[in-house]
Structure formats: C-alpha cells, structure tokens
Length: 368
Length: 269
Image (cartoon, rainbow over all chains, first blue to last red; front, side):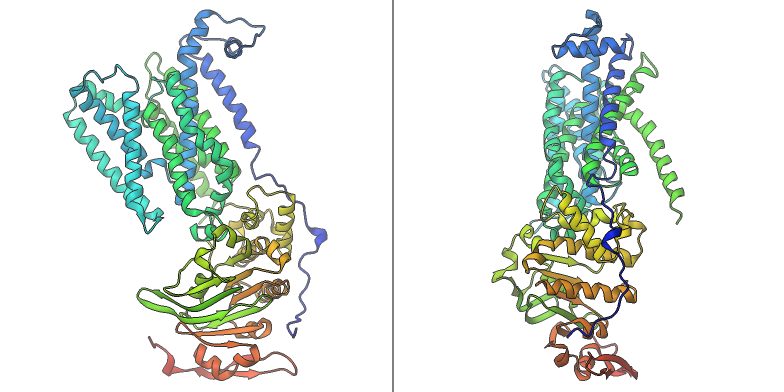
C-alpha cells in the first residue's frame, strides 16, 4: 500500500549533475612542493662559507650519478658538497619529512590538529636515553664514548621505542588501544622523562651538560652518509604504506566507530600508524636530537592549502617538512656565521610565531 | 538477513535491551518506535556491531555477527548514526566517497558516478563541492544518508544488505523527512532490509511495512502497521494518549489526545 504518495517537487534532475574531479582537493600541492624541494636542496648545497655556483652544484650531482654536464666543478667544491653539505641537506630533508609525516599520522589518530609525535613519548624516551648515554655512559664506559658515532643514536632509538611500547602497553585494555589513554599515559611518561633528564643534568659535568642541552635543541651537524641510510630505511614503511592507509585515515576522521562500519581495520591502522611514526621519528630524533614544530607546522600549512584529505596531506606534508628543515638549517648556519645556531632553536623561533600568525588569521576568518 | 536471538545488552549494570528476538526481512522497511531510553539506539548499536550482546546473539545469514569480518560487513551493511562528527573541511562529495571505501581503496569514475547519484538522490547535487562544515545540520544528515546509499550500491543491485538509520529525520524539515523515508522505501524495494528509528509515529505509519515498539528495553510488539499501531499499544510504548484518525483507505494518522500526558507515567525510573 503506497498511500505515502506525497507529491514532492523534484529536487535535482540528472541534467544539472556536474562531473566532479576524481583528483583529491589540492593535489597540485604535491608536484609544486617536489619542485620546491629540489630548489631548496640546490640552494642548501651552494650557500655557505665557500659559495658554490648552482651550476657547479648541478654538475657535482650529475657527476655523482654518472652524467656529464657542460659546466665544471672544482675538486674542492665537489668535496665540500659530497662530505659536508649534501649529507646535511639530505639528512635535513629526510628528518623534516619524517617529523611531518609523524605529525600527520598522530593528528589523524588523535583527531586533533595539535597532536604531535612527542605525545606518545618517542621523543622524551629518546632524550632520556641520549642524556643517560652522555652523562652516565661517558663516565663509566669511557671507551664507548664518542669514538663510535652510533652509540648515541642507537641508545636514543632504543629509548624512544621502549617508551612507546610502555605507553601502548599502558593504553591497551581488552585488545583495544584506547586513544585517549595513549594521550594520558603519554603525558605521565613525558613528565617522568623530564624528571629523569633533570636528575641526569644535576649529576652531569659542564661538558656533558652542554652536550645534553645541544642535543635537546637538535642539530644536523653530525649528518653523514651511514646515518642517512639508516634514516631512509626507517622512513621506508611510511613511504610504502601511505597510499594504502591514506583512505583509511580519511575514514578515521569520522571517528573509530564510523571507520569500523566502513570496513576499516581500526585496531591495525592505529597500531600500524603508531609503529610507522615511531620508526621514522625515533630514527630522526636519534640522529638529529629534538627538533620541534615541524611536525605541527607542516601538516597545518598543507591543511590550510589543500584540506584534510590524507591522500594529499601525507605526501604534501612530508615534502613540506623536507623543504622546511633544510631551509631552517640554512638559516641556522648562515645567520650568525661562523657560529651555528641549533636547528631546533631556529624551528621554534621561526615556527612558533608563524604558527601563532596562522592561528590568529584563522580566528579572524571564522568569527565565533 | 539479520536476526536477533534473545539478545540482552547491559549498560552500567542495567539491561537496556532485554531478551529481544526479531528477524529482519529483505525488502521491508521496519520502523522502530519507543520513548527516550527505550533501548532503540542500543538495538541499532547491536545490529551495527558497535555493541556486543551480553546474552543471545546477533546473526547475519546464519552466522554470528562477531564472526563476520568488518570489511565484509561494510559491503552489505550501512549505518547512519544519530550524530556523526564531521567538523572538518571535507567536501560533501568526499564524504560520500568514503562510502565507496569498503569496495575500493582507489576509487575510479564509476565510484564517483555512484557518489554523484547518491547525492542527487538526497537532493544535494548542487552541494557536492561545498565544505561539510558549511552545511546545515539537515544537509549534513542527508550527506551521511547519501554516503550510506553509495556504500550499499552493490548490495542494492544484488538485492541484499541492510540499512540502519538511527533517527535520520531528527534535523530535517518536513520535505526532507518525507524524502528520506521515500528513499528508505526505494532502497527496500531493491531488496535491502531497512531499519529506521523514528519518533514520529505518523512517519512510521505512512512508510513502514513493519513496526517494532520498544519499552524499557523489551520488544513490546512487532508486526504490520495495522496490527501494532493501535492506540492502546502506542499508549503503552510511548506513554502518551493518542487519537487515531484514519483517512478513507489510507494509513492511520495519530494526534495526541488533549491532556494526553499521563502524569502517573512520568518520572518513573
């Protein structure tokens, strides 16, 4: 019985339907940022105490991969590029990408644009381990000391991971990782780590204190090819998995319950995202120390330009991080040359006011 | 299709769904009526798998729902919840495209056409490129219904699947209330089982094939409109006196009787 034959005006006709683009909003940002990354890398390789012409930089890069160009590059320039500037610039790009991708993943998981990889304790755990190795390690195991450039990164990486595992363990109940519990456990563990670092600094001597302070502001000064290789390996899962998880992360924006109703394996995505983040950010923190604000600013800028679609947000924020960090490093080593500023100081000094500027601008746009 | 076998569900030590048995049939619109706190939303949550019964089972085609993989269920079951958070800058079409996620990770033209069609069905063609957070509550509600339609596209073609709508008319104007229920009828006609939680008895009377009345977590009555939607039963379920005005050959229409509130029924635990 179709007594419900209410006469309703037709709302849409098929004729008025527009064909929409399949491309996610803001897709153009990815190629633009890729080009910007190339430009920044060339700039980072040519600017410094020994100025090298961009043409020579391109030549050196071409030679390195077995091509010839019409330009010449002196042996000294080639050495500076290969051993000092290129490792630094590439390390900066990889670290920036890792921090930004980690930021995007955590923000998706917490459904909060202010989330940061540091929330799950990876940075503070790494910092405690690094401080412990610096202060206690060099006191008791002198021969471990700085003779091996990998002791500190290895310790920081392991420290970061142990902390994350502890946070996750605390936040797990009945086979589910409760995200709000991750946040609370992370806050407690971050506080604990801060206290541990404070204690270690109390018993440290002056040189160790400076070392710990320097590390906690971050630096690309120790960049070398082997550490770049390690960092690239740690970033690999993020690069391989992003196309797979991006649609799932979009669904997760609706909430975990809704995402599950859309067939998203929520528990696996959550754990996977945390593991990928900690792998990338843990390795970054281990090699560069604590560099703040990139994980917050890069995703935020991309969201303003392209919206929250992770199919664009993940690669674009990664690329933007890779652009911003070498830029910040360029600034850090040229602004007061020959004195070099810690890069974490630069990202905070430039990043924090910029972030505030963005927030104020947004507030003006959306009157409440 | 989907069935409830003596399902009991507790919340905070209190049974909010008690011993409910019912089998949903393909091709039917089932309206679920009941006062606030009668257990309607909990029943929907049990069917959507968000809640698990403390006793009894929820079955999907002879299998226990807990044994059905979420990815498989997402292809044949769509849910429009009471309030889905969407305070972010997605376009309406992006949100509808999320309904294609159970079917493909990398949507193509075909999926986009399905999404566009779903938006047209809820009367939002012109809103596809609008940001979700700039839409009104009712428009947003319809975007979520469109998402469910896009999600069930294949299930509708095959004439199987279930659509759960938890108070889909809550934020809608009169036209769109009717429209959403017409869509529900249309989806049911394609062979999908549709469950609609409603507060408006007249919408239920006008559109449902089958009505479930709940009170205090129990299934008070279930059956056709003519059988279940009687003033005594509705009075018992909804705690209000209604007068039935049935137009010639039409479905019943209910209006509250003057002084309809039953003071003795208020403030009961």
